[in-house]
Image (cartoon, rainbow, N blue to C red; front, side, top):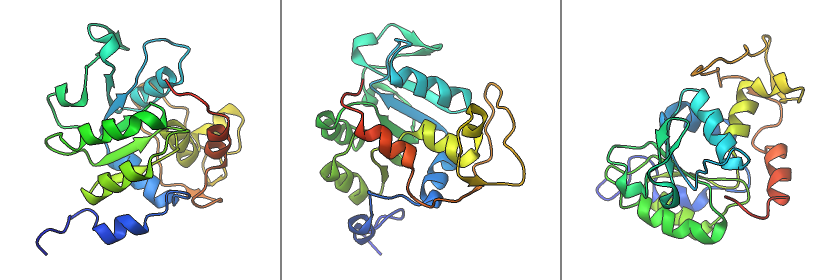
Length: 209
């Protein structure tokens, strides 16, 4: 039908529940994307964005650090880019590592990218329902107030290597990851859509990079 997004209709966007995501929804995103532009990435190795960037890069994702204050520098060998529109190549997912007040301008910029990204992901503590609705109306998938590092570790059961119960059912333990290694995300979670670790962290998160 003309005017209907092949990815997500406006009706589906309105009905999306951003308080609780199913494992299948998160899994499909993490399996489907290959390149991730992280807005608000920091070269400081004490910042949460640094750890998230490094983790995802080590799991084989093509990471692009976006921060106008660090253009001319690199993060783990990846040169900083000043804005999403300056990347110069297609990007599958835009991860926003900024606080909620800065989300709308980032989403508006993402919607001017050609081609459009497939996913907008807002980090722990970051949520803007209006920005999410705009992205979904354009056919993008949206995740808010979640950490892809935590979600990847939970769904792959890799997080169990750190002595944490991943609440994932599997007859085999996830292998110890190596550089650039993608783990299987097709493991069954006991808990369903909610990620308690993410929720607890979000409540304590007052400021993002």
